[in-house]
Length: 111
Length: 113
Image 1 (cartoon, each protein chain N blue to C red):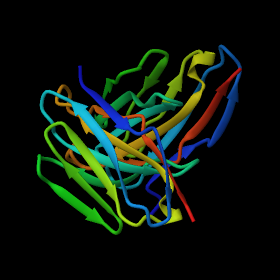
Image 2: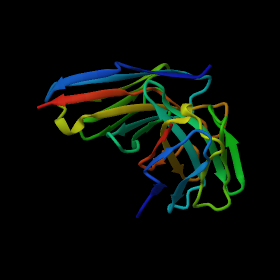
Image 3: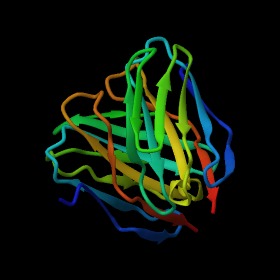
Image 4: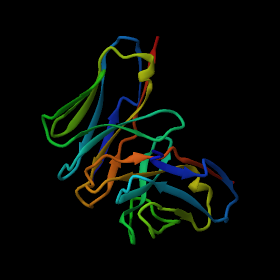
């Protein structure tokens, strides 16, 4: 069964304290792995798409990487405005348009 | 550019009532989908559409109906509301390729009493 697991569930960092969020997945054939950011009371906002192992994407303080079993979202020198829930999703090969989401990591960056 | 617009933002229903959650996008996207988000459960796919006139079931379709008569609109109907349907509902759309990222609305917060 296709599955996405994110860890940790919650993370508190001091401003400037770098860390990584993990997204492990089991799918029979990965068609795409997506990272989103979700602020309270809002819909998810797209960050990155990764398609194949070894691929990396960067945007400001965020860097996403992908292996055959997991993806990491690295946050370098975070700021309080990076506080949000970060969601990971994979595109299931079983259907043309079925995304499987993880339960997210709630990140709090303290000033 | 409005993106994905969901209405209403909040709704309270009584058990057994029916209602329609509206979703509209102005990006000419072919793919649209409905999710529900519950604490500790993540986003779960209810129904999706790959174009006007074409819909299919997701992971949790029971108790919900959809139709897609135009490219822009994808309403979600609750046939007979139950307390288990209390949730936050999100609509999303994406372009021609299913590998393109989804754009989400800001959700409808629905409470069933």
